[in-house]
Each structure stands twice: as structure tokens, then as C-alpha cells.
Length: 245
Ligand code: F6R
Image (cartoon, rainbow, N blue to C red):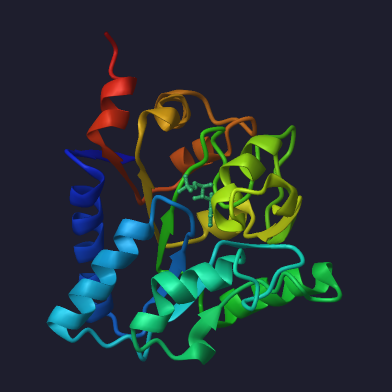
């Protein structure tokens, strides 16, 4: 894994924004895998800014998001789809038919997971997948466990993960769903290139274990060590917290 440190979150977002925009320009029909959460908000701001300044055309771009809460749809303000509309999709000319999302309201969730995998396969897989990481080492909603699921599946969220998501539910933990649909580890590892972004001291232990520990289902992000094309982008406060004293 190539690991880079940036002085601030904004500097990280500027570099990653440039990387994504250059990739879109080089390959107008690129398939992007996208995360939600606090970390990528600055990245999406960069993408919107660069798109305006440089007239980037998103009409051929295909996107697949990593995850969605069970029971929520884009009409729900806490859904990840609503997040993506607000922070990116409403501001670039991506074709709504090219936006891939697992449907958290599907009546048959297992069938919905299969459909999502088929849709990704039909798009010939993900060219560039952007990931965040949880303080417990989760990627997507693949939480630490004795065994991890390979493909898109229904995941039960750790309490720590639910608490980290109260921001999207007006601070009310009771409203944060207990389950989500998420790409599985094989879905993630099948992406041709991966960039993981992480900021803030609270993630230092998870990032250290991801970079230097063994590959373990107890830290799902450690599986990224098996992928040949992973770039890890950190901000200085996080990097400083993992540096040996
Ligand atoms: C969300 C996702 C999660 C987040 C992780 C970090 O789509 O895939 O794995 O990347 O929970 O979230 P933040 O950025 O809010 O710390």
C-alpha cells in the first residue's frame, strides 16, 4: 500500500479531488465506487468546485455507492442516497440512470443484494473505489467479525458505528438503523484501484493495524493488504498519532 500524509484534511481532499477528476477526464465512462460519511464531504466539495472550474463532464460516469441503511430511501433525510444527492449528485451532470445504490427499502433484501452485484458486474466492475474507514477498522459496513461476507449483504451495525452515524439523524441514536446493505469484501477487493482516505487521531489505531498488522477479519480494512493497487491518504493529525514516539 502506498501511504501519503497531507498537512490538513483540505489538502488531502484537494489532491484526491484532482486524482478523481483527472481519472474522469482520462476515462469518461469510468465506474466509480463512492463512500459517504464525514470524511468525504471535503472531497465532494472539491469535485464540485473542479467540475465547475474545468467543465468536467460526468454524463458518461457510472457510480456505485458502498452502502445504504436498511429501511431508508432517498426521501429519508438520513439515507446515504440523500447524502450523495446533497453532497455530489445534485451538483454534477451525472445521469441519474448511472447512479448505483443498494435499495434499503427493497421488499426482498437478499434479492436486492444479488441485483446490486449483478449491476456492478454488468458495468464491468469498479475502476476506482474511494473508501473511508471506521475507528473499529470497518470498510463499507463490513464490521469486525469472526467471518466476513464476500458479496453485497445485509450487515448488522456495531453500536459504535451507529453512534458515529447520529449526525445524519439529528443526533438521535434511536433513529439510526441497526442494519445496512453493504458491498462485501470481494466486491471491494475486485475494484481495479482503491484509495482509502482517513483523517483525525481517533482512527490512528485502526489505520496502524491496517498498515502494519496481520490480515484479520477482526480488522476488515487489513484485507486491503491483499490488493495490488491501494493508496492510503492520511492527514497529519492521524499520521502523527500513529508515528512511534
Ligand atoms: C460509508 C462507509 C463507511 C465510512 C466510515 C467512516 O459509506 O463506507 O465505512 O467510510 O464509517 O465514516 P466517517 O467518514 O464518517 O468517519
